[in-house]
Length: 327
Image 1 (cartoon, rainbow, N blue to C red):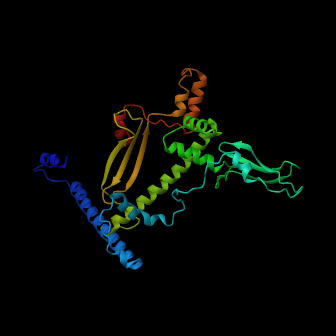
Image 2 (cartoon, one colour):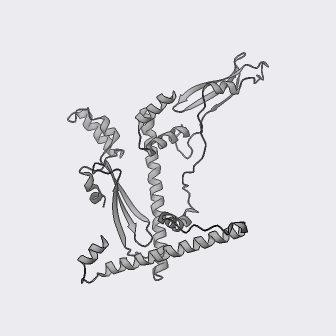
């Protein structure tokens, strides 16, 4: 494509914006090469300091563009209050019968009999209350919930963390409440109701908006810092002109995707400065397709649905036009 453009523009004078974009691109690749060399040198020095026998190993000469961007972006994450999700093993699946086996043989402090058993009560989605009691004298020995509750919430009855994580897991896979029901039926588990699922989904959407603002704010700071390193005349308070590129992508091929994404990318650093998600689908609107559109009931529901800013659909038209609309 570049060769065709060069042939088409042969003999034409480049504009000052085109020359500046080309210069910024050259600076970007020079900086990337310098970063790769520094990282490789640090890796070799680390090997020498830890174990001299490992110096003979060849250093990794290949570094992806994402790794280079993370190096530029990572320094701004140290003082962040929003932490990235960590891969942890906080939950496990346990058969119901094993709870009683766990407390089998435990003696009661009141009657001295070893008749302690566990009961699962107060089901709340995937969380339960475990009560250990003596069946001889009905003394409650201990009780606890199978999941902690969500912190940092103003609610007087905060939800359970396991329910929030399950909703997040299925949404991350592109699945909805029906997939949660199928999973629970296959596993023989109690699940979440549709209103509870939607309530968690709304909260997750609000949290993701905060994360989006935080990530973009850090990206803007990283881009400004990179341009200040190139041009020393730029100060922190200056409004700077930068070269950017725009690109769009879709969830799937075939020009029938229901979701599209538009990205604004800085030419110098390759970091995303802004993005917009376009959607032709809303799961809640789809459930109301059988309602009479001309009825007052539907009009009242649709207006409240839009006013609450929970409608996922923000685009009407062909999938090909999503890229242009997002811009």
